[in-house]
Amino acid sequence: MVRSDKLDDLYQELILDHYKNPRNRHYIEEADIKAEADNPFCGDEIALQLKLANSHVGEVGYQGKGCSICRASGSMLSEAVVGRTLEEIEELAATFKGMMRGRELSKIDTETLGELKVFLDILKYPIRIKCALLAWVALEEGIQKFRSRA
Amino acid sequence: MTNSAASKSVAERPPLIQDIARIREDFPILKQTVHGKPLVYLDNAATTQKPQVVIDTLVRYYTTENSNVHRGVHYLSEQATQDYESARTKIRRLLNASDDCEIIFTRGATEGINLVAHSYGRQHIGEGDEIIISAMEHHSNIVPWQILCQEKGARLRVIPINDDGELLMDDYAKLLGHRTKLVSIVHLSNSLGTINPIEQIVEMAHSYGVPVLVDGAQAVPHLPVDVRRLGCDFYVFSGHKLFGPTGIGAVYGRAELLDSMPPYQGGGDMIKSVTFEKTLYNSLPYKFEAGTPNIAGAIGLGAAIDYFTALELDKICAYEHELLKYGTKRLSTIGSLRLIGTAREKAGILSFVIEGIHAHDIGTILDSEGIAIRTGHHCTQPVMDRFGVPATARASLAFYNTKADIDALVKGLDRVLEIFS
Image 1 (tube, chains in turn cyan, yellow):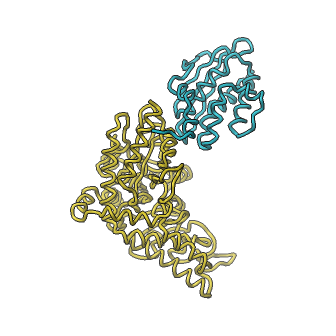
Image 2: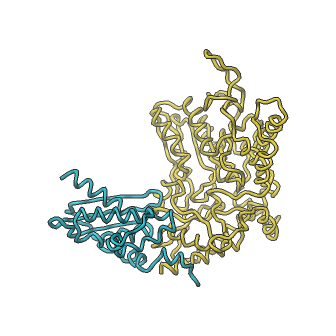
Image 3: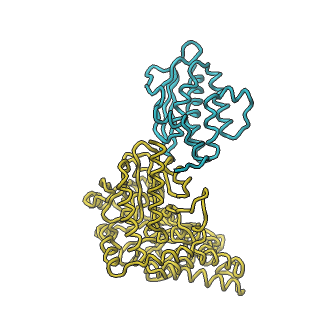
């Protein structure tokens, strides 16, 4: 069967791999930052836990239910944030959201995003953009809450 | 019509499959390609496509007749009024109501339920009273009652369903009582396809003197509906699910009940006379139709009803039942697929989940094959919770669908499985 190029863009190996083999699935009870988000329209649900080591994220836990895009996005997020400071993570989240809103990427943006650029192709499927964003929105809220507590 | 009655008419009068090709010609949208593939439209429970005659009627109305109804003495207004009112008569005949005054135009089924909740509900439901709905209701038949219950301190009771998606009638019997003030129930479930035993439901409610509203949004395009035989007190439906335009629908209400009810909205057309001291309300059905109505929509719906009834409903039922049987059989061959909604009395809906693949991924991949289905909770989140799934994929049928459409769906699902293998 010949696949249309467009569909291949959406269901790239990297996304399917993260969907089928999500990373960092363990739950971190004693996390510094806990965040949850859902999209009742799709039935997507995700939960994130971040444990800080000094000023950096040392460990991430991520659990998700939902479509391939949402789950792959959460899984890739969990890999991307490890080793970064909260400021760097917020910057990354802003860049990722910018990309998903169709903002043109600078060379620096491209470098910052790394593998996360794979989600650029989802812009061709407007209805699925929110699936890619769910984990990032939760992450930002989690960080904000953590800051307001501190 | 029940399935057994549908099967009987299959035997007596087999639907002419070759006619379907001709019928499809009446629907211009079906001729197009999507992503380079012929469109396979299997989202009829969301909205149905419009035959050319409905589209032409809208164009004709705006081209030659556009004016306001019930006001002008001029030619155009008289023409528009006549066509608008004749659409009402067509609805009355379709539902076999006794009088045109029992048909109130609304924006659709949702507004119909809100009208009854707002007018009848506020008048008759008070603190400690109970409203009975079922576990398979569309959000539009849950939320208006929740709002009313909150306002009045009343309580919403829910008839549970079994694993096939059928109402537990014994539980319904137990819920009915002296506190019950209204039963509001779906005729044909949009997410499960279940056909509910309305006559029995009404009889049981009436034995307590409780009126029944029936949500017929899905039933009217697929089943014969006779409000007098059903015995229901209110019946609501949407035009756009009946091959008509969006933004138009109707409420049937027993004249005696409608007469005793306060208006739904205030404005023009619903009044006889207005002074700053007092307003005299108009007679039925105008009392419930404030403001300039969706005239073009009503006339377009009239054209859709003419088209639909000319196809002969028993033939449509029998044909759709055959399609449903075929679809059920074909989908059952996919091992990881589970059908949600397997009631004995069922029509037109194939709702399913595939293990390990989210409905939205199924929907996107099918879309790339030109196949339109609905994915999500179908505005029936409690149904999703009942079956323990976040969402389903739903193929919903109309008389213009064919076995080839089902075959395309199955082939598309093969592709889904291939990508996610």
